Length: 490
Image (tube, rainbow, N blue to C red; front, side, top):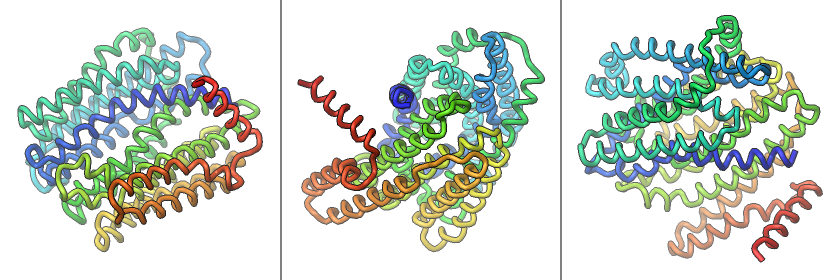
């Protein structure tokens, strides 16, 4: 099992580089997006709504067929049949995405009127639709690279896409003053260039033969996951839609900045690890020791993730002061820890759901996430009028926590696994306690505060040697690892 965990860690780092490369553009450009010379607070609010709308469209266009591809791949032993499967799924996604994109493209004025009460953003919405079509098709080559453990190609393509997006965005927004439209035009150029460099991989992994029977089976497996995927995205985006309706676009902008910082944990850490972890978890479905493997994944993942959450939360104010160019965004500091914990319970939910994948009970997954999305909407309606951005943040966290608890309960009934829930609670308690301790330093001298906060973050893993957390074999492995590291340095 340790060998598998090391493999996951290695691939997570490589996938992380690729994942960060594509997502970090938005973070590098925050000083531009929050600079009144280039974009107003309202413009940033509009951009935030368009960004999350693109995520929803990608989920719809892709129909979650890539998940069926990942699940079926290991059942097929013939390499040629795998290539036919890849061609069939990619073609299906491409045709559906283009047709649905055309339908929406002819109604952008109407869509802009519904979302913003003006037709001013209809062209930007059209660019979002085009971008979503390209991104939904990209999911299949990316899935193929992941399942073949071709992390180097995955990372190379991501870096190419990142560089293109970054350079063209700066050129369009800063020099040509194209605003929101320039941002999505740059993304389209980056996505087109991706296909140019990915074409060889796509051709090598395709045999031009459409398998109708297979796609029907995949549809049956994947269509509940479409609703699960859409509901999952809405679960994490309904807060900004609700703020847009119940609050104002400046509130959306402030909240979105806090969400970008707190949510960066999901983008850079959780997603990167899951890109490497998910294929391995599916591959081990039929192994005799898979339950212990799944249990330890949740424990170790939670332990490491909480350390990152603590670091981001403790230094949230310093981060916002550094990157935001307008004092209006300082209010986002207080919601960063809340948003960060959403990633924690989202990760835990995605890990324990493996029990439902084992028995292919995907309909349950979609239903659970849909119910959580409805709960999130109701909580937003209740809390936003009273507490604004704080109500939106707490509503999303409560909904994600509820989803984790229900998913865990249902999955255990289908496929019982002895997860170390006591340790999970200890991780949360230690993380919360250290964060509250760091909060007391905010009134101190800035440099003294930074030193104390750094010590608090560094002390995080040490607490778990004081409390009963690690097993004897785990303690010995950690000691050997530290000793080995010391020996290498000496």
